[in-house]
Image (cartoon, rainbow, N blue to C red; front, side, top):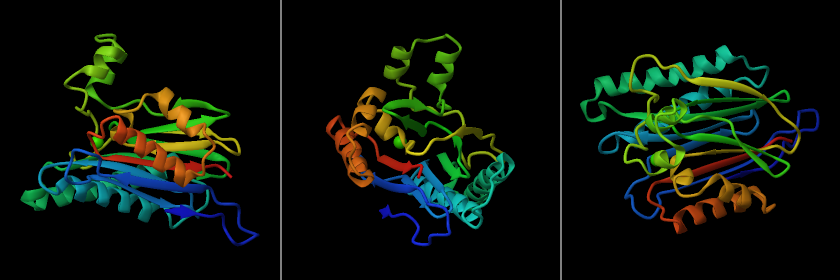
Amino acid sequence: MRESSSPSEEKKQAPEAAALTDVGRVRSSNEDAFGLSVETGVFVVCDGMGGAAAGEVASRMAVDAIIERLCTDSGDLSSAALEAAIQAANRRVYDRAQVNPELHGMGTTLVALVLREGQAWVAHAGDSRAYQLRRGELTRCTQDHSLVEEQVRLGQITQEEADYSPLRNVITRAVGTAPFLMPEIVRLDVESGDLFLLCTDGLTGELSDEHIAAILGQQLDLQSCCERLIGEAKAAGGRDNVTCLLARVP
Ligand code: CA
């Protein structure tokens, strides 16, 4: 999926974006989902979980709920509006899981980026991540809501122990698993040319931040860059579904 800049001159230039998802080399279904509205600068990646097809349902519902809430308006965004959209997505997934026994317990990670008025808002719950690349330097914008990352923060285990822990997939916040959710929301200043990457742990579980930075630094077009990221994650094992979304500030 590729989007070009807005055809209308009087409108502000829209971000350039591309996204791709892949089932990987081991799983039989893809529980990741992504959505984007380039015109209104809204980008979302989710990684669903739950038995049977529940993970797929949760991630798709959450993506659609965020896009629906935020793409009707292209003006200024407040933290409250972004939080309200995430709460609405949470409620929608949670309520659906309550009334359908097959979907009980489903949930999804969520990482959302909104690019507007020279600012970026990043919101997340779970271990899907956002990164920002500026002049070749890659910065992580999110801290995983995962058991091992919290243990690292508390000094209980080292980063290396976390990387190899059998508990590394346990997440501590998710959309849809409880009636209320506390997402983490940050506002970042952006410069023209900044590149944002949203991705699931199927990418970051296979590739180091240095490896990701090297691929992003190859100056490929965004679609080719997504293909390269996913190709290398699969070459490194492809043990999980892999999703990446790239958005460049105009
Ligand atoms: Ca995953």
